[in-house]
Image 1 (cartoon, helix red, strand yellow):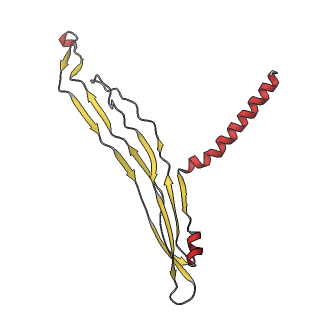
Image 2 (tube, one colour):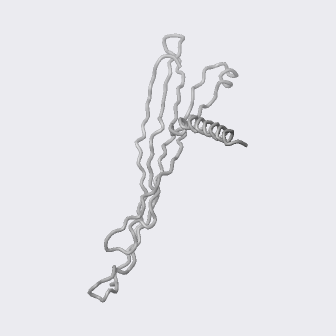
Image 3 (cartoon, helix red, strand yellow):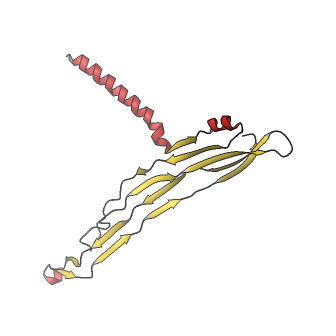
Length: 171
């Protein structure tokens, strides 16, 4: 196979991979996956207008943990077991239900929606220190004894959920 043919094939494969990556980027950048609930068949079977229902499911994205930090006076670095951050969201729900109009033949609607909200979490971590100090020059370079230290870093959960309640004409 000639080198020009190989180069052309490599360029085509690269272009196809770039196009596939570009097509996948908007879904990954969105962060949520919409989930519609199809009630059209039930509407036609019952002969009445049913509520419109849908939801959003967040896509959790793991982050990179903060590495260990070396602190003067400790033999083991801080955060021996680092906390893993995970970014995602709370699921969202939307519901629009018809309400009969009191004075006419039309329909009004009542809508409740809780949009997907961001959620930031940190997994629990662990901090440990040995019962020895760094080498002490006053003690011929030998370490001194001290009380051992063990600490559990609590998990963190941060979010700001919200909800909307609306009424209006039409469904």
